[in-house]
Image 1 (cartoon, rainbow, N blue to C red):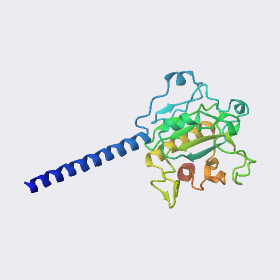
Image 2 (spheres, rainbow, N blue to C red):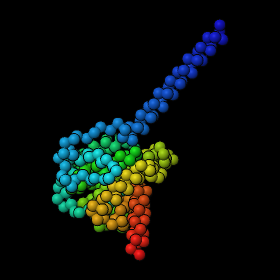
Image 3 (cartoon, helix red, strand yellow):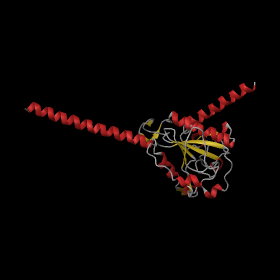
Image 4 (tube, rainbow, N blue to C red):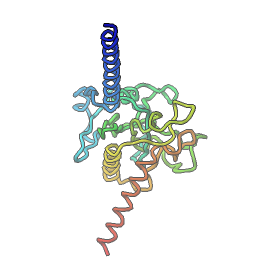
Length: 254
């Protein structure tokens, strides 16, 4: 009798442990899927309807989810001095739900004149593309050329003549930890789907605005207060893509 009772207690204990383990697994899976954007809400359809004809980027083979909020400031004052895009800057963020990051970027940044400070494009880990601002507006994503934290690289570029692309989750302390600091990453972590989507954005922007390959930079190349590897993976891929295209053109012309 005592043995039977012990077996029953052991069975209940094992069942409880399995139930907890299953709940933890489900919670982790749901968390990862949420961060990947699987449960992202759709932006209001009116935002796309009210956008200018040149505000939304169209990329063959990719759906661009347009989050260009009409009443976000997007540096309304600074946009008056916005120039034709001459460069592309690649950034990254910590792993969060993409739509949450886009909405956060719509807020006013009082440290930089009260304007919205987000990026034009965000790429989720699954390769989904989110456009966070109209192409006709400027966002604040790199420091002014004369800022002490700018490097000597590409001093001619600033927020007013560049387009920012952010790889969501590109800095993930869980995948690339720094010992003793849970808020830093030791390297860039981006998925293949992200790189493919990011490269498609860069190709289209280069074509649309006639931006040369040499004007694609990672944020870490332009500022001393950023990790040197920020934006590095996609930037290198884009430059290699340009080199490949040039070699192809040279072969066809010879």
